[in-house]
Amino acid sequence: MFRYLAFVWNPEHLGPSASARDLCETTEQHAAWRRVLSRPGMQVYAHGETKGINEYHRLHKDRGVILGKLFQRSGLESGMGPLAMHGDFDQAASDKILSHGGQSLVQQFWGRYIAFLSDKDERHSVLRDPSGTLPCFHMRRRGVTLVFSWLEDALQLLTADEQARVNWEALQAQLLCGPAIGRETALAGISQILPGERLDLLEGRSTLLWDAIRFARAPLQLPYQDAAILLRQTVRSCVQAWASCYDTLLLRLSGGVDSSIMLSCLAKGSTPADVICLNYHSPGSNSDERHYARVAAARAGRDLLERAREPGFQLERILEMAPMPDPVPYLGWMNSSTDAGLAAAHAAPALFTGAGGDALFFEIPSWWPAADYLTTRGLDTGFAAAALDAARLGRVSVWRAIRFAVRERLSPDQALRATSGPALPFTPELETHKVDIARFSHPALGEAQGLPIGKFTQATALMQAIGYYDPFSQDAAPELVNPLLSQPVVELCLRLPSHLLTRGGQGRALARRAFEDDLPALIIRRRSKGGMEEHIKAVLNSNIAMVRGLLLDGELCRRGWLDRERLQDQLSERPSTRSASSSQIHALVAVEAWLSRWTS
Image (tube, rainbow, N blue to C red; front, top):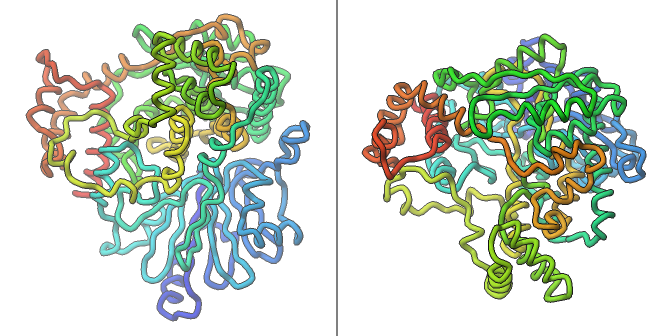
């Protein structure tokens, strides 16, 4: 499991210098940690680096180090395909990176990386790459700033008096508005560096070198077929670049459009990597997609493993998850043990998924593309077709689509842009208590308010980084790789207008056109979308006694944030008009399980 840990302090101050020396000595007692950068006032360590997968690249004269995996944009833009970065940076490249505060790194490279930089004045900063794949947290103790990817590494260095405490205001904001996309986490004193952000580690000044909103505000007007060709080229290049890092990899193949597109890029003969497909299924109306997965795997010439989801998953396991700065939505990790076992059995160090496709390719059933068209292009000859497509997509009449679009153009509905968490049985006290939402939001959200509604929704959905570390299997887990969320793909999809992405009134329309010659017709024409709601309901039912005890006697009820009577009704076996979905109950379980670690 690739991790990093850094200590930054003012070397002119004796107290912090002594504390930093103690922290470094403690870290170096563990042979697994390797010191990869040493500067006055900054020491950086890495753990679990692997040649060709996660490495470190030093700047000239040790003025900084980049940890992770880097690809050069030059190969992507020339049509040669992305070129992996090897070795250290020469003086010219290093000077360019440092003189622009890391901006050239963001513009000329992509991948998954964290950069520690030290300028000519020994000002130390850290930059998180725009994909946000590698977590990046920081906290300050005894005059030393700790920067880390894995919370447990930092906790082991703290005294009992320094241990983390719950940031109740941040947790309240997450409950009301959804997962954190701002800097503050649900642990007091621990903040995250945002994707694309550079932080001055001594003065605390931050600069957003990249954010999704800037690209969403710069629409790329292309003929439809040209856009399809560019999308296919970009997706294929990025997927194959990631595959080049591994000899063998697992690919989670649902049989949906996104995972099938991924597989088409990795078909036999497209990459030297041995690609093994993995499909999970369970009983239910839309939970068994094996037929689609088999067709996709056969077309690509790849082996397919089929495994049943485990209905007997024991929710007690979430009480033993690794400590995290925020509650972990664990539903996506319930196959963790099977993933880890198959990765070990097939010597596959990575698990590829098609995560991100819904937002990237615009699988959003709404009339919004008509409003986007009217906002960006006005009432021209193409608006009627855009409105007709949007009506089909949103399943409304064309007149309603036009009326909604005009209304949105003249007076944007801010309620559509308001963030909200799952509908849960909160008490009026929690819902009416004033929380400074701006404090816990992404700083670019203010600019996002001026975006057309469809682009606003797409861009804000892509601001939330997906979890990198498996909280259950941890070291035994394969590395999670989500190639569709590569920086070049995200930037392109943000710039492509929503009416282009959904031409013909179909979600993922442009993606389907781009890959129509690569995918089976059955999948190109597929309208249904798989799910696992019935599976997670079965998991909930088999753990209902544990869930009742955890929630009804938990911290959220004790603090008066949950309506205990209403929750008890929702967890009973009696029919109720106030029922909550299984996903909503699981969301509460995740929060309460996380709280049990920090409040016990």
